[in-house]
Length: 297
Image (cartoon, rainbow, N blue to C red; front, side):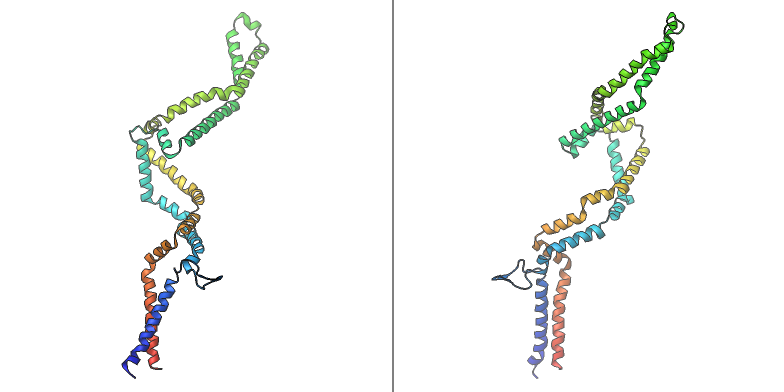
């Protein structure tokens, strides 16, 4: 047997193994679209990734949203000592900074003017309703009637009017006053209070945040502790709701669906290029081994 015959088997086997695995790897991404011959679609077209793009997107979305980036992971990330301290320190520095940063300016930077004005109006209504509700629960009309009766009695006591202004007469005079006040509160209280509330909100929204914090009497340590408690509560109690609203799995799925197949190919190759080349070379090695074995058969 000549040297050429001896080497031909391993070389051809190696070449076949290399080409076969090279084609198999390329078929993961190629062709990008189905190849049609008349009404028949050529088998194995398009490639696996183009064909299964939607399933891949859905699987990646579930993997990221349900396993890789869970609510617990995000909560632990935000509550990590280093991250937590940095965020709280930034908030405290912002609140205590001596600069003309008003509440109005801050909110207008993070929302549209229309949204801000609507929110302010709703807050104004809510405060007025709470005040009216509180006054109604106090039964201010009854209090005024009682106090008016007592005042009349005190003023007339020891005077000639005390013989005329007995308890029954005093009550009959004071009761309508209380009833009128109560009726006025119920019918006009909201419109009477609202301008006052509006004025106070206007004043507050145009004052520097640092002034408001200082007036509340917060020391630096107290401010840090207060922000810490609010931050921790918010992350532990509300992060799940926010993550649910974000729908991480859905976002990842849509992003992958929106990617071009060539982008997906580049993404996969950037991670697995060495491994895929190893698969191709393994085909050549297996072909070489099989070709060598055939020499002895």
